[in-house]
Amino acid sequence: MKILIHKEVPSQLLEAAREMCEQIDIKQMIFDANITGLNGKLGMFNPNTGAILIDIGTCMKNVRWMELGMSYIPNVWCNMLHTVFHEGAHASHFMAEPEHFEMYMEHKDAVLEHAADVEALELTIDWTRLHETPTISEMGWAGEQIQTLLNSLYLKDPNLIDEAIEIEYTKAAGKVAMVAAHCPGLADDEDAQRVIRAVQDGEIGIRINGIGYLKIDDILEINNQQDRR
Ligand SMILES: [Zn+2]
Image 1 (cartoon, rainbow, N blue to C red):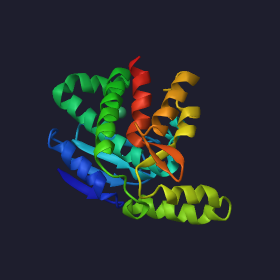
Image 2: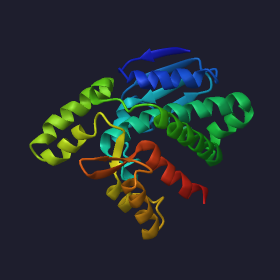
Image 3: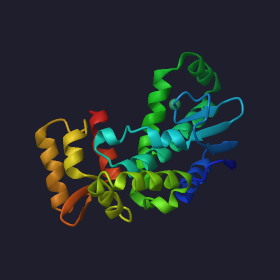
Image 4: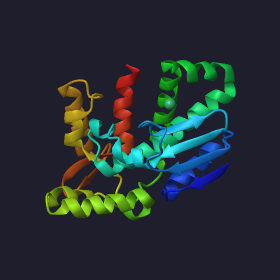
C-alpha cells in the first residue's frame, strides 16, 4: 500500500492503517485536510482506484464522540482511527462483493454503511484498548491546529485548557460525570450510576486528582452495548 501524506498524521494512525492493510488489499491511502468533493465526509473509499481518502480537517470538526461525553482531543483522535477503519471496512466489503458494492455506491445503501460503522467501532475499541493516545505534539498537522486553538482559548477559559493538558499523557478521554450525563448508551440513571461506581471501584477508566475519567474504549463500549440491545 502506498501512503500519501499531504497533512502530517500521528505515527500511531499510520501503524493502525498498516496493520489493517495486512488483511485488506488497499492500493493507496491519502491523508489530507479540507478535501473538496468529500462534502463534509470524514473519508472515502474509491472502488475504481482502490484508494482511501482521509480528511484530517473534517476529523477535527466532527464532534460525534463529544456527544457521548468525550473530550475534544480524544474525539479528534477517535475520528481519525474510526475513519481509517470505516473506509477499510468498505474496501474489504468491495473486494468480497464488488457487484453489491456498486449498487451501494449508486443507492447509498444504509446496510453497508452500518456494517462499516459496526466493524470500525469494534476495531477502534480494540486498538485504543491496546495503544496509547497520541499527545498533542504527536498529532502532526491536527496537533498544530489544536495547539493554536488551545492558546487562543486559554484567556477565555483556563480551566478547560488545564483539563486538556492534565489528561494529555494519560488514557483519560472524558469525565465519567460527562459521559453519564450525555451518553445515550446509558439508558437510565441506574446504568449511569453503575458506570460511576465502576470507575470509583477501579474496574474501568482511571482517576486523576480525584476525578473519575473513562478511556476511549470504555466510552465506545458503553455506547456499543446499547446498540446491541
Ligand atoms: Zn461509509
